[in-house]
Image 1 (cartoon, rainbow, N blue to C red):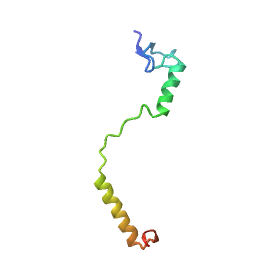
Image 2: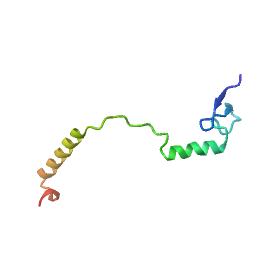
Image 3: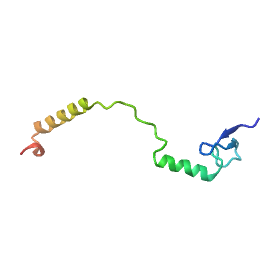
Image 4: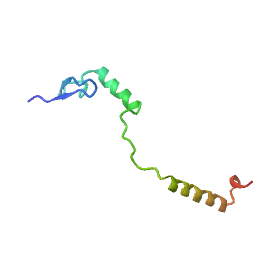
Length: 77
């Protein structure tokens, strides 16, 4: 039985075997196009975590208080 897959770039059918040099891609061009998309972060997994601005502000305030407590010159006038 021959297994066929579609090239992720151009959707051409590709035979999945050891002889298929660029599998799952149909050719070197499609492989490089996909690599370029990864390099450009077009295939990244999106971060869906919510940004909690209040928590961030609270954390920054706590850090600032720690620096002040350490007598850090950065916060002195």
